[in-house]
Image (cartoon, rainbow, N blue to C red; front, side, top):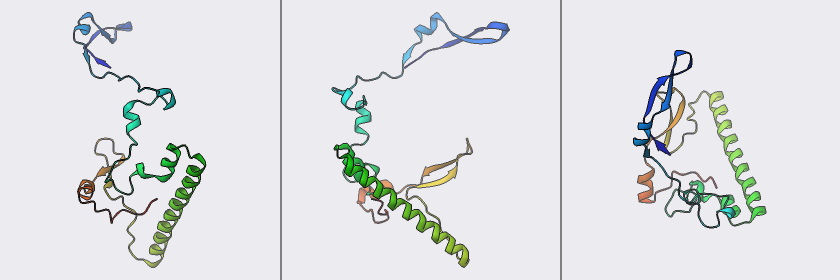
Length: 158
């Protein structure tokens, strides 16, 4: 991926158009160059070295880290039937958890008691000041928990 200067020139119908000039070649700067694919890439979905390492296990992460998903590990080891059964189990566990939260919210509404909805541990939902869309912003705490290996606040999601 290269970057270079682009000069405005008169376009069709009197409008401006953008066009590379010969001096643009002199101003060319390489921003990024793709690394070659790893050996036997055809057997690894043609993933780059980076893509292959993104899901690598790392010691000391939170027990909720997606790299620890048991169904994913089974799939990576070629144990497809077990992986599918485990995925079904995890999805059912997630559905039950959501239903429990929904029931608690209904009960709180009926009782007139305050209900604190689910909140992510290390992120808060807020409106982006530029796009005005809801987004998740890091609220802190993860790296401190990782350093201390203090994961008691993590739910049992697997």
